[in-house]
Length: 87
Image (cartoon, rainbow, N blue to C red; front, side, top):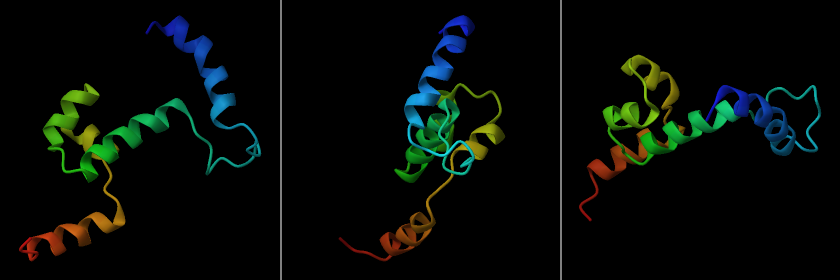
C-alpha cells in the first residue's frame, strides 16, 4: 500500500472504527496500528513462536516484536494448568 493511499484511508477508517465514540475517549480509540498489536498478541496467545511472529510482522529487531506480542493475563495460568493436565 502506498503512503498516498494510506493517507487517504486513515481518516476514513478512523471514523468507521470509532463511530459513536466520544472524541475525548482516547483510551478506547481504535487506530489502524491497533490491529498490528492485536494480530501479534493473538498469535502469541495461540502459542505461535516469537520468531514466526517477527517474520509475519516484518520486524528486523525481535525486541520490537516483543513490544507488540502481549499475552493475556490468563495465558500464563493456562500454560501452568496445561503443564499438569494429562489429557
